[in-house]
Length: 178
Image (tube, rainbow, N blue to C red; front, top):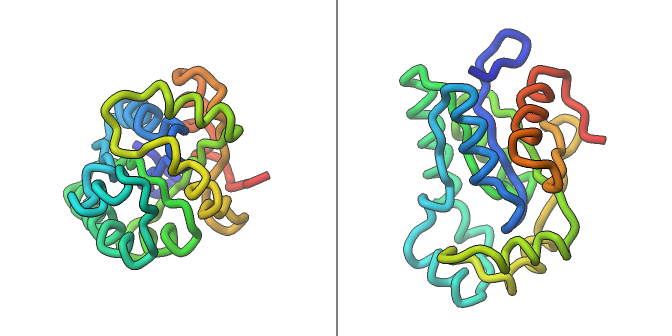
């Protein structure tokens, strides 16, 4: 169970496409005995089709998706389950909506890496709806965690086991986003 100052928190692993959100979130959920929520599965079929065709989603497109992600967090939290979510959460306003609408404290783990490395990783994926051509749009949309948001940055260059260990350690510490 992830805790901050003795209180249970849900963990949101965030970042752009290709950062490894799903892989790290699944590893964290396993380590913590938490429920894993894959936010990509909560996109509407229309939104997935738009992204697959290279059309970036607008804030209006994302609102119902973020509401579904927050509702999933809220439901699992209400059932007493620890939660780890893989969700891009690119803008501060998206993270604010998740915090507000989930009704629980959230800790963010921002996976960060170079554009070249992210593009390489996207190119190695098979069967995902997000094409590499969308990376520039995601990077342009990304607003890094601010000091008051409750989270830490983890490099995508770390092996997954090390990244998971670091994330668990960082979540138990006071927030710094330097």
